[in-house]
Length: 201
Image (cartoon, rainbow, N blue to C red; front, side, top):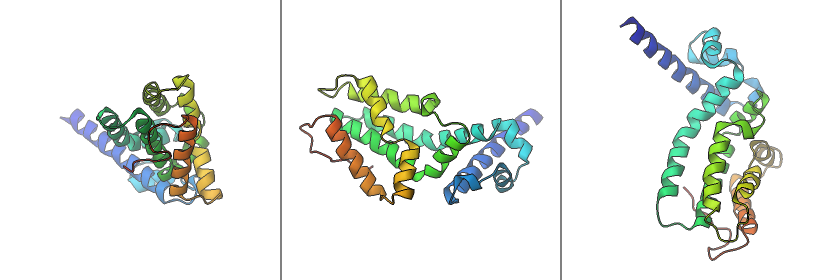
């Protein structure tokens, strides 16, 4: 009984920490301003709990990103499995979903880079996006190397580039999404689909 209670408490603490960190990064004007002390205080736990549970700042941020990506990845997988859209449209929808996530979570993604998670290629979620995008590209006529093309298209929506365009260049999210759609169309060389179109989720 005591062990079960301890597990329940640990789970509640974990969820409280993730929710607190998520809220703080979303509300902050700079990812640098959110400290482990701030997160511990907002979650109502000791700072030591954070380090025992997540290892370090990088581990905590990675867990927050994972918790935010889980529902998106489920929705993307369901949409990809649904019939009715062309391979090109599936590619466009995949990249648009990833871009919207990065726009909405750019403070969190920037914090990940600052915490030592700067190489996206080592992240589990990057491998997931690359694999599902590569599979969609393999169905698009005229794509010579789906593996490389998936890497190249994902590079166009790196988190640091998204933050630079939105925060420094003052590009609107809609403008960025439209530019991405046009870029994808040019990379894929035109098609019977209407150029530059995208479906809003």
